[in-house]
Image (cartoon, rainbow, N blue to C red; front, side, top):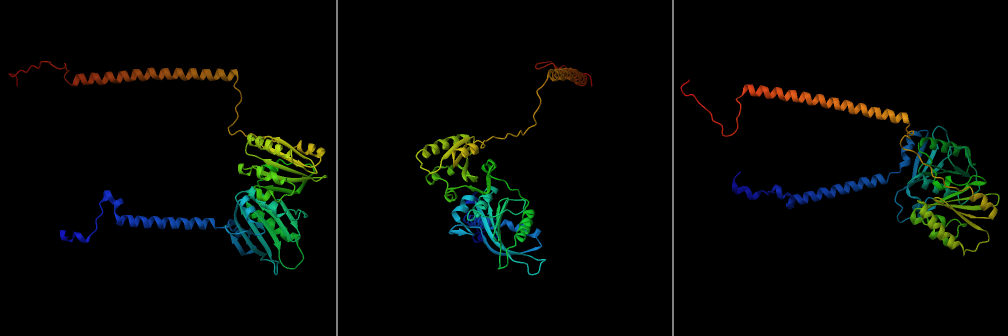
Length: 389
């Protein structure tokens, strides 16, 4: 290549490669392409409806997709619930399906609606909302909580709130829905983890189907028993959770407010108690604080005393490390003797190592002195006999 042809080539100095326009354009294009690919893959992962991963194990059913929703922006309602409610409970996706048994000719079509939430607490909250419109109903024989009325069955499993509805004009068959729900529960290997406040509900005279769970102002405002002017001051910004239940025979309403720390519970207890002093109600309102829990009961005083006395927060402590027994005198003696033995062995080893090291150094020194002339230091006289050859 002639030097005159150098002008036809564009050279980039390697130390200054980052300042080369040609390199910068390629690097910019590669970065943009990588970001676009990453965004596409992220959206694809977020858009996946995870309930589909359990359908292959249910090969005796045929699933036909009706709707899938993974983005709730710009929508007012998804399924049978309003979007503000679903946002409070942490909706990830919603999907609806038609399913029917493949082994049975002319099997009725059943519609399946699935709300996938962030965690089991959100799924339990949606499950409780699905039952609030019609409290009349019954429980079918299933290993999970469920609610059946008419031709519709609601239940929850892990982070999923599920609803089965029989389609067509035929008679309602609760056993068909129970069989499908049982197969779905068995196919989803996840546990139903209840919110903490639900676990602290007193069980005596509890009306099970009245239990509801709230995680925000929009959902709590649906409850007509809770004082409206207290809703903004409950503390949802501090991650409070509210559980509601009714108790017979006086049909009293109990609200359990669970806060992250006892200090927050005490602070909100004082605020709510002060505001309730001016609240006018046809029935009594009674409060109690126990640890993380603030209880608020609306009903007669006698039943309030009986129910609130059973609301007690007892934190559980689990030892992570194995608990050791307290050492005895014999253990101390054994430990002391072991220390003496270790010190003695260490001293003996040190003595032998010192003797061996000294002997080794003496051997090498003697061997070197015999083989080489002794060195008298700087300034010594060297005599040479020139007559001897």
